[in-house]
View 1: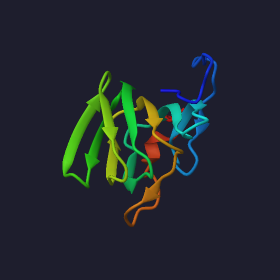
View 2: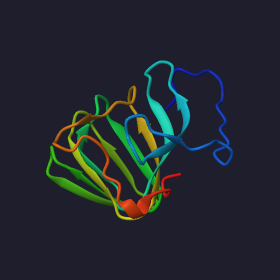
View 3: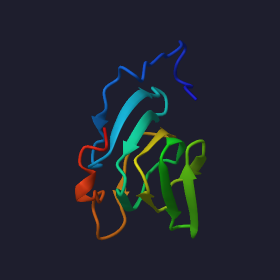
Length: 138
């Protein structure tokens, strides 16, 4: 929802370039817009197969809609696991700690309730990318 906008927003995702996600090595995104009222981010995100986001949390909740690929989201705060593939949706409230494993190259729509941030909650302080996944992200 773009509550801070009063005009239509159009983004041609085919021509928008993939950019590295700040602080998240191996991940790439195409930011569609940042809500001027909430700071929430709307973006298409891609991770390579085999990537692992170690336990982490965000200040704001976020939802994802998987376009293609598969990922396992483990919500460590609630003890739940979600195996997501194309056409599936998941909302993760803040500040739930979660870990994500990418079972194949995965592209998904990411929408946050507020400005994007990420805090690592374990000894690993960054995304783990397998050596054979180089170049898969973008």
